[in-house]
Length: 225
Image (cartoon, rainbow, N blue to C red; front, side, top):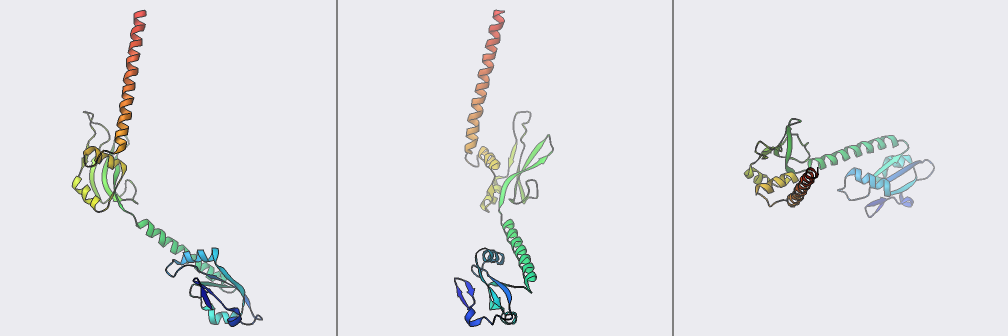
């Protein structure tokens, strides 16, 4: 047996037995380094490294089992068991990797919707980015009322000290929170706030111009009549 680039081969002339009593055996060598996950090795081995397909003696197989440290050996007698075991291990290995990816998130400062259908209200919270929008949060850092009050004002409450604390801990900011912090003076104004203000100013000027033209046409019509 010898190894080339992490792949183990069997020297048939030196180790293979007679061909009289034999069974088909397929050996898949799992490519990759020793630290790679088992399911990744199996996928690489099945896709690229089907390196050995021959007839060997079953007793010699039971005695030596190819001595493969990184391989998956299948025979006609043990094929269903090894296939089932490899599928189960692959499933649990993939589930473990997905759980690790899911858990590896970060904190974000964002808006959490509350209130009712016709009266929305937002909490500014520090929550895990994998949590639902209205789910559990770590700490509430403020509130935002999107509906104007009797004076035409939208009320925003911010705990800047705690926001500064969570930002120092590596928390990310959502775009709506960045805009609110820019309006409060904690950050420079968000570029889209300036762009939206220019668009709104042009829209209102256009509406005023259309209204004045409409009044002028109505006045001329009344004079002619």
